[in-house]
Length: 205
View (cartoon, rainbow, N blue to C red):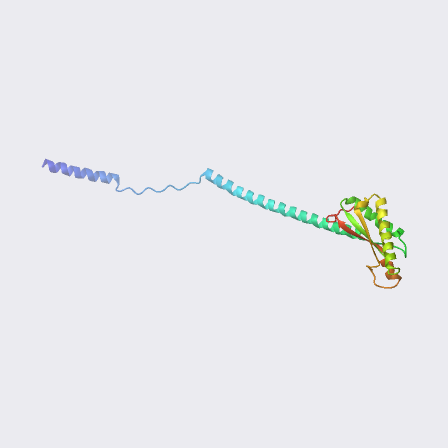
């Protein structure tokens, strides 16, 4: 009888304890994540660094494009200058019939050549003398030589080293005009000027 009483008391105590505990506990809820100030600042820094890097890359690309354009413009300008100087150097001078005396209207052309040769010390030229068809081959070869020499002497007398200037004569062999009248003959009595070295990049005087 005493045992039964103790057993009953134990059962009642267990029930009371269970009721007091309110049954099984619910599972704990995961805490709501809160923004971390350090992480947000780091993300913002990373975003700003990426933007800065993109801006620097764009600026570098633009600077490189501008540099290449400047180089291209400079090269094109230098090429135009060289072509202009070559055209000036190629300008012919002419002579009166059976003469090797420089004409007054050609002195200015020779003065331009003097200035260009002075501005381009590596430049070397060849002067070729030509004649019209009248006269013998031998006579015209000699006359063409005198005409080329007259131009060379003028350049040398104005300070150009004689070693930079070659001369030759073609006599009547290379007519510029094919006619057989004074108009054609006047064109054929001439000196021609040819660059033989140092003409790749020329400067204006």
